[in-house]
Length: 323
Image (cartoon, one colour):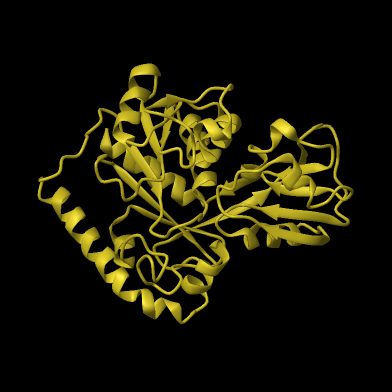
């Protein structure tokens, strides 16, 4: 399904014209909803600490998770005590849940589980981000909150907005859902504080983010080292081809690539059927969902976001000016 949708949004499939009236309706609903907040008819929750929103205006993955991890590390290095909130997409969470080591991806969502395992940051998931933020402040010693996604969640007031754009696919056909990938009109990018472009070429007033791979890590024995010859790769993310291209750039010889839906839930049989002899390499987000039944030939490739120093400088200056 995801592959067919991508054809409509990014490859000029004719069905976009059939869906266009629904996009107009979606756009009208969006305008009305945003206007209600601007007019004060719908209230925003204002928090006593700065709030940074990391989101996008397109449906699907664009690189928000590496950006959130980057911000956690940046803020910590400058004396802040960050906490993170998320909707916990695809999780079994009821109400607001504070993420711990005992929670699996199915409990709190794959991205929250991955971010927590990487950083041990105070983290609360909940469908209503304002309530999740309140619990975060009640339960943890944090002085700044990062919202993983939520650019369109206007019920939560924010101090800084960061929009992530896929540098290869950009905004697709520039149409609103369902004819295109846009959650909001592309003019929304002019109102955010930072536009960060993941890969590809950045334009004026945009910051380039590159994802730098680390060494592959075995899911069963981290001391092992992986030979780059003859591996099988799979990915269940918004843009799987980006992951496959990264592996090729790192010198891997891919015998086969398999694409799954974003936020796909896996079973041991499902992954083992891809290959029972060759090494299988996946994304870190996929690995967090497979670690409980990992096999000896399963690996993942962790990546770190790299941004220019002027991004760090401007972000920290804006936070200082908010104080």
